[in-house]
Amino acid sequence: MSNRPFEVVISWGIPLVLLALAAVMFWSPIELDDPIPAPVHVDRMSLGAHPVRVAMHDPAAIEVASFDVNCNQCHALFEHDSINPPGLTRHNDIVMNHGENSWCFSCHDIEQRQRLALTAGETVGYDEVPRLCGKCHGPTWRDWQRGTHGKTVGSWKTGDERQRRLSCTECHDPHSPAFAAGIPLPGPNTIRMGKHGAHGDDGVHRPLAQWMHHIIDDAHSDGTDH
Amino acid sequence: MRLPVLNQGDSGGGCGGGCPPEPPGDSRRSFLRTTVSVGAGFAALGAALSPLRDLDVDKAFSGDSLLRDHYKELSAEEKARLFADIEAQIDRSYGVKASVGDPQPIPGVEFVYALNLSRCDGNRACVHACVKENNQSRSPEIQYIRVVEMPIGTFDPEHGDHYYGDEETPKPGHFYMPMQCHQCANPPCTKVCPVEATWQEADGITVIDYDWCIGCRYCQAACPYWARRFNWTDPEIPADELNPDMAYLSNRPRSRGVMEKCTFCLQRTRKGRMPACLEACPTGARKFGNILDPSSEVSQILRNKRILVLKEEVGTRPRFFYYFDERGPQPNEGGAA
Image (cartoon, rainbow over all chains, first blue to last red; front, side, top):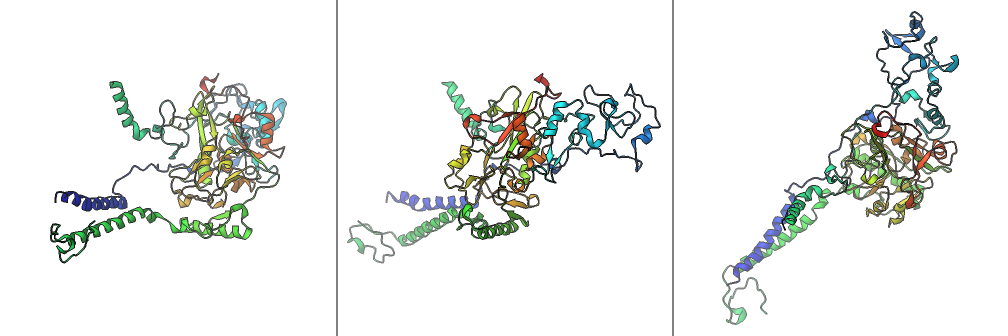
């Protein structure tokens, strides 16, 4: 009779514990930490395979009060100041940030305003912008001609009709050609690459750091006591 | 040895009067005990099988996927049937009419990628264009391209930062190096695969047959460029963002437990188009083309530019090259004078 309680524990307790465990596993009432991060939102506009900016066509199309006008139709009426570019009453939306090249007529032809000025009186249309930029940016123009600078879209096949090499002003604003700095699109958001917290200041990858740091801290405090 | 006897009418008869009398109610207790034990056993069995609740029978056993041959041994009819099965499954899962193709390497074409480290400004447009084009899982997100930010004057990707993003880029005094599959001519990843689920194609692209992959991740360990990704969970892709232009060996939806990697967008490039990362790059830092064509942009770059082969010393012979421009310090590169 003395082993009766033990027998009861064995024969009732173990099945009941197993039943309880089975119920826990089946219905999972315990909220586990979900290591899967939520998806990040990325603006579709920032992924488009289109030119970064819209370049002017040739001849340069200008719309004034819904009329297409030619540059010279206005500029023939005004005396131009060929020495002193500031003090504009029109084109005030243009932000000039092109280094030392801050004079309009370095690039725009002083007589034919719908043309661009090369050296020695030669002019080109807006469809030949690379020649104009090449006046100063020689190595870059050379690279662009080879295809080692700039952006070619559509097809990698030489001679494919879909292939198009973008012109200088389809990426660069000619008045402010450097690309502006900006906030980048979201970084790694995966399980394997972890979150910021998985890396210490020393850059070493410690994927368990978030969960383990209490234990590690405790161990450290024990160690320093002795 | 005394055996347990159930439901014994004469309590004293079993052992000749030497043993104590059985207490009344013992048979009921034995019955309950047996019932509970059996019940617990069945419950434990049910709990052990409970992951089957999440099994999508359609995904696990679709069409010929269980009994078919290796991709390279499939006949044209078998391929057509397999691809039709996959299309039907995508339609059931996502409600999207996708076309799963099988573009083959173009004779006389070997693809090469070149990336201008002088121009990349770390904006990560390539990373997300890639995710969208190649139907990667959004949660957890799988990104084939990893952009590493490093201080100018150093070159140690292992101590670079790929989490940057709180500040505007380019950060003064830093440069950015995107890393993705280098499509090696001597790829370690294909050699370690125990089931030949990954191999190098004639145009240099290393591909994976997701149906053949057993998910051992040896290839991930073998890759010196950290270019391979593993699907830890079922990929989650919004149906309205699924790219319906798919290829069997590249951007068709993957399943849990298989590897995936950059394929130079073979569903695009084998039809003459540019990879998605190149089309999205706003700085023109990315160049792609046929190295066997001497007039192609990548040929010009390899002839005329200064080239960096990442981890050249490990002998993988990558088809992915970094190059530089000769140019002075830029306004946004602060301390680099």
